[in-house]
Length: 245
Image 1 (cartoon, helix red, strand yellow):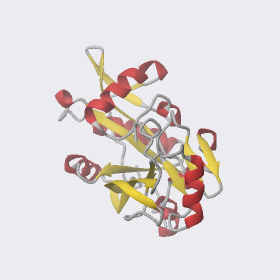
Image 2 (spheres, rainbow, N blue to C red):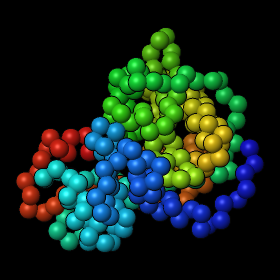
Image 3 (cartoon, rainbow, N blue to C red):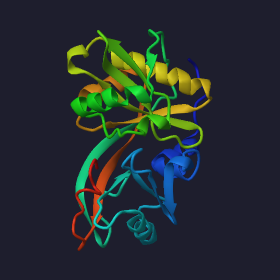
């Protein structure tokens, strides 16, 4: 599929895509306090700050968090701000799919809330990133079954205006190498195209096979970013509140 080239200014929203999503199209899935926002706790563990260099945004995030809770921030700073400590730092690669042709692919099944237990189990075994009981409500999720079992899936997560993030792309190890992931990603892209939006995604920096797949499909690598977990210094760690981070 041919799309018009995107001006560089149109991509600035991707510098911090979760914030405009949570205060915009996905406001119904969010809690917002001042310059900080978070998904509802059963939707996703992610927090967003209007500006990660602004101390007030971090103070507002602390208000949203449970006492002692660690907060998971996509596109977070490489080092913790004053008064916080970094408990996890993972590098991710952000790709934009403006030039990707969704191609022809067998029509996958559309997944529903009835499939959530299997989806959570598949995510647990393949580790594409967090997926909770209501994550499915963020967008369209599709999957492939073999002998009745869910063996591959993909869907949508962050959705700032005009954009949709492809997420939870995973395949059971026993079924890899069959093109299931690329077919599912193509199906998700086709639906995003139909809405007049542009696909983007994040992949863990230590998943070279996935990075290679997206390059092969025609995605453009835009930037490397940090998905970090931070917690206030001096507060006892609340393991229950931070579960799933």
